[in-house]
Structures are given as structure tokens and as C-alpha cells.
Image (tube, rainbow, N blue to C red; front, side):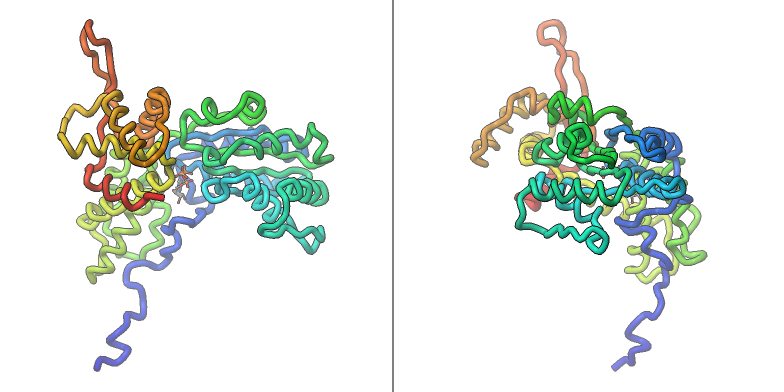
Length: 400
Ligand SMILES: Nc1ncnc2c1ncn2[C@@H]1O[C@H](COP(=O)(O)OP(=O)(O)OP(=O)(O)O)[C@@H](O)[C@H]1O
């Protein structure tokens, strides 16, 4: 039998700091590229916090992988440091609303992340106390510990309702907190979030500033990846790899997460094939893996009706391969059938049209406007951008 020297590789031949390419890695300032204006805008909105005044509430929109969460977290970290220099006590809480979608879960997460029980003697149990008690304890923590806090609500559209937004945006004026100022940074990739999910009162206080983050172009993606080159061992990454990955990712979605995934996968593929260099040839397979991952994540995060609409389009695409795509009304007919099978009431045609727009915004589908001539008026066709067989598999895998 081979001794352990032959059986194991003692040193990773490809990566030296693979964590730079891992999903949850938060890059430091030097590695954040192409978002100067967005960072400045965000900093500007929350700037009053440095003087102990109320920061503006902000909503950030943009497609997936455009750096929304990264910039929100980065500005919040910087705010805390700068506030400290000014003798202002500041902190921020980050809530992933896809995980903490109920009001109770969200308030619990905020309170426990801002608490320091050794200082306040306040306990924030995981569960078992009323929502109103969580709020009372949160207000108490805020007043005892801070002059100002930011609350980042990522995927804010996943909140079951807007009760927590109402509470946070009105805490000061309702007299819940005496001194501490609260700023909310909401993040969403739903273009119609504000119109569809917020009541007027919340809308007016939550949306003081709004920013849209555009997709990255090839040069920006190239720079983002180049800034993490030191994930690889010296000399392992061939020169053409990053430009090629950047060109592919820019052509598709301008998504930095996907670009970084391509780079990591290219390294992993090299590893699994026993190669000593990462070559351009691995980028093609890596792109395919990253694309399926991206798609899977988007579907996993979508609501049941959003999936039913996609299922309807998939059924049409599998049954007759019409290169022109399918009209909204045809999709709607099949969608109603899917709802019947799922035992769910169907949404209105208008809502389905909005859901189709969301799919197009996230590059799951492509929409094209057609003029049907004087008799018909104009109409919209929809097409899947991904192979319908793949979509069917992903949809089947993500049934709740
Ligand atoms: N400008 C940038 N410079 C460096 N890395 C970036 C930049 N923008 C995004 N990234 C990286 O890309 C990944 C996705 O970024 P982020 O999570 O901020 O995107 P997002 O817009 O919030 O996406 P989603 O809507 O899917 O949550 C992260 O790993 C992040 O570090």
C-alpha cells in the first residue's frame, strides 16, 4: 500500500488564499472596484450620523451581483469608524430578510446583534418572548448603547409585511427611543418593490434616498477579479483567464458574484484534473457551472407564483420550440392551469405581467416587444434564456 506521502497532496497546488473567492468573503476597501460613485452616494446619505443626527433612509435596487450588499456593509463599517473618531457611538445590524422574513425574527436578529449583555444586562432569547417584548428590549439597547444605528435589510422584499419598517422608521417620533437615531438601508432586486409592497406611510419615510446599481461592464469585472488574483499561487493563473472570464460574465449579466464564481471554479477544475496551471480552456466549463448556480439561486429565492409563471413558460418552451417566444396571454393560460394543479388561486394578468418583468430584469427570460399590425396592436413575447430542460430540473428541485 502507498504510504501517506503518496496518498495525500500536502500543499494546494492552485490556491493560496482561496477564501478571497469564497461566497461570503467581504473584500477590504482596496479590492472594491468600480463602485466609487455608489459608495459616495451611500456615504452621503448616512453622513449626518457622524454628527449624531438622523441618517437618511435608503433603498438600493439592482440586479443580482451588482455589489449592493457589499457597498452597504462597507459604508456601514466605515461609518462606525468615523463616528468613533467623532465620539459618536454607532453600530449597524445586518438582516438577511430571506432568512428572517417575519417581523419577530427580524427584530430578534437586530436586537441580538446590537446587544452586549455584559454591558446592558438585557437578554435576547432566540424565541419564546412576544414581538412587542423584543421591541421594548431593542429600544432599551439602542438608548443605552448608541447615538446612532444603521439597520441593513437585505432582500427587503422578502419581509412578510412592512410592520418592522413602520416601527423602525417611526421609533424616534413615536417616542420609543429617546436619543438614538435609526437609519434603514433596504436592498432589493425587485424593481417594483416600492409600488407593490409598501404602504404610503412607510414609503414616504423609508425611501428618502434611492439608488440603482447598474451591472458591471467587462473592464470592471476584469478589475474586480484581478484584485483577487492573489487567491492563486504565483504563476498558476494564465494571463488570458481573467479577461476571458470577464468578457463572458459581462456579456451575460454583469454579475460580480458570477465572475468570481467562474474564477474559483476554473481553479477547482484545474485542481480536479491534476493541472498545474489554470488555463482559458477551463473557463468555459467554469462559466457553465457558475451560470447554473446563479440560476438555481434566483429560482430558490423566488416566490411560488413567480415559479408557477416560469413553469408555464417552460411548459410552452418544451412543447413547441418557438424561436419568437410566447405571448403574455398564452403564458397566463398555462399559468392558470399550473395554479389549479398546485391548488392555488391564480393572480391577475397584471400581476403575472409584473412577475414576467421581474424575470426579465434578472435575466432569467428575455422580453421582446412586437407590433401586431393595426388589427392587433403591440404585444410582448417572452423567452427563457436558459435551456428549458435545465429550468424544468431546477424548478423540480426547488419545490417547497
Ligand atoms: N465592486 C466590487 N468589487 C469587488 N467585489 C465585488 C464588487 N461588487 C460585488 N463584488 C463581489 O460580488 C459578490 C456579490 O456582491 P453583493 O452580494 O454585494 O451583490 P448584490 O448586488 O447584493 O447581489 P444580490 O442581489 O444577489 O444579493 C460578493 O462576493 C462581492 O464581494
